[in-house]
Image 1 (cartoon, rainbow, N blue to C red):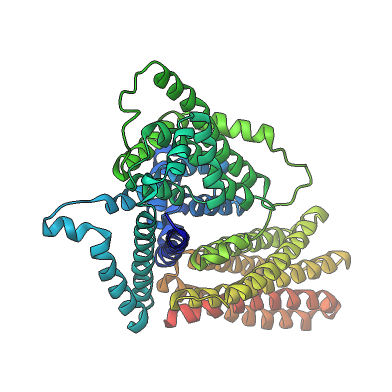
Image 2: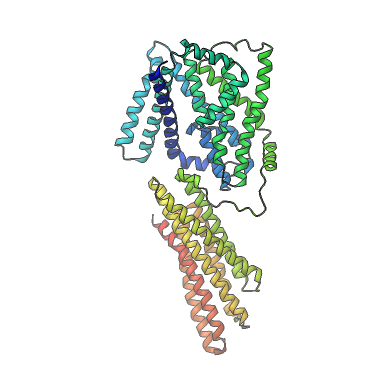
Length: 545
């Protein structure tokens, strides 16, 4: 192995890593919205969470990316800590699929079908088709598919380059000496852990071991403890990604560490005992890329079998080791989602939904003050108004940053929609608070509305509340029929406000002493009308689409 072989090796590793990252990013972009739906529907069912974590990782080809995504969901409170554990266990198993893909490099045969399955045969086809789709297609989905094919082709080409550069290693006495030294299980385990920590990818690390296996000098005695070490070292990037996140997200990262650490603690002694007693007759045999893929998958599957039922213990342990202060404030929006626009928009939609619910609850509290004034209730309305102000500023800033990313037409439309909605919700909570101020002034004046006036306000309050609740339904469903109903209810409310205002003026003509309280009555009506106007604006746009 000369200087030029070393250059080929480094180039192969670089292509392998770049191809894996490029393919994973394209897959996330293509399937981001589906992953958002799948992950958002994960329940406390551990088996379902395990399968979802495994499937998502098989799609994006990176347990690190999946685990960082899970941390982001936990950090954004879109997943509970206990829900994240089966996902993490599943992700650790799903990442082994890359080793199976890489094992295609070892396919040998003379038939046309077997030759076609070899990377050297299909890689040029994939990259040719991928470039055609990426370069000449105008549809975003086809461009993403093209990017996936290009990334996969680069990954396989990098693997082939690595294997070729290592083909002469077996003839080098220095390499033989290294392999002999690595027959020490502890040393092999440490080398595997360091390799994965440096490469920041268990798939890439196992890929390098598979490339060495193609050189024909890696035995199971070296490979097994090295794979166990690789699976421990892969936690490093996840631990780094957890810095600066919420305490639950840090707990999730520590759980990932604990899962891989306990896996090593349980399996390494068992391996050592079986090795020492001669119960592994194949230990001195040469490993192949396929048998390494089997070993990698088998190890993670065995760990999953006992870790999944023990998830509650891992959660409790994480809460012991990672404690949060009482005054800790959870993050509102996670910037890690900005790399996947569909997930970032989902997070913003969830926060906007929280604001909508806060506005509905705030209105209920506000109109209750018409019957009986309560300072605590009025303060809760003020707190809701301030909360929505903070949310609006955060969401606007977040979406502004996201707008500079590469978005699909659907994502751009969703971004614009959320900006409009959060602006309307903020204005609505302002009007609710102004309504409460008018009610307070009415109570402070010592005057009372007439029985007819109070009945009219109660009627309008009920109508406005109904409009708020059906608008909340519209936000989650986007149903055009619901949108048209919002528009109809808004028209009726505005008409009734106008009619009640006229009847109120007639009452004032009969009793001029009630002029001062009449001002508060019309102010409250005006707030009802403005709330209705904001609610109907987006409903009209939805109904017209």
